[in-house]
Length: 260
Figure 1 (cartoon, rainbow, N blue to C red):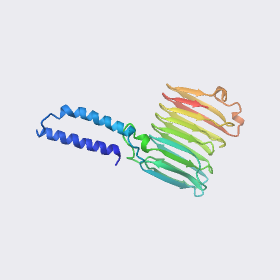
Figure 2: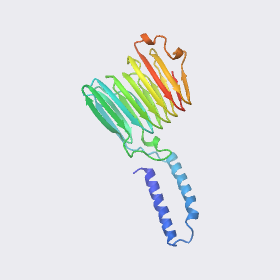
Figure 3: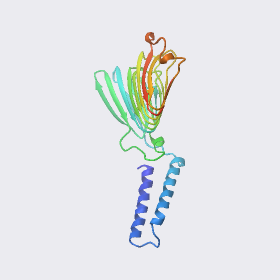
Figure 4: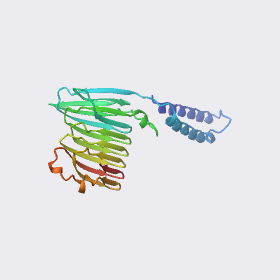
């Protein structure tokens, strides 16, 4: 059981016992006059202990998924709150390998020579509270540069750092909420399509040197900042002829998007 569950379970038992004794007229004072101050004090202790108390390592699950001869793959990551890091570095014959704080649920399907993999946070793994997400839900994933990849990410109130520069990502889809996301796009994947839907998020897309880009971006109440020195009019002058290029379609709500 998680620390927050133990704390609030004990607190409810104590408060319930005090109310029972009060109803039985077994206490020399009125419980309600003390209950609310005690509840506020308990809440303050809980918050401070979560922020400054000993950090729990939590459960970390290590996973390695083989390619088993697949020549292409689609990877869907469903990571809510926490820190997500991904990049190259998978071993020969591996699609991915990584360490998953809080554990991971995975589904693997194969159709012909294509793998379809979904990784998500297990049900019931969330730690409710103002600190819980940064304590247990850290994921660090190494991906294969051997095969073309389609990446589909859905993230919540966390931090995402992706280095796709050495990978053959041909399609990248990102949906994110109140998060901070920074992505280095592929350097030599041919044509890569990027789709971004973001709410109150900060999203930074970095285009490697030598890669052309075309950007179609808009914001409802936020800001879009495109490096006009590299991408005048939101497009590289040599986009149509470039061997390696990215096509970016992005919409943000109350957040910000930066393309560099």
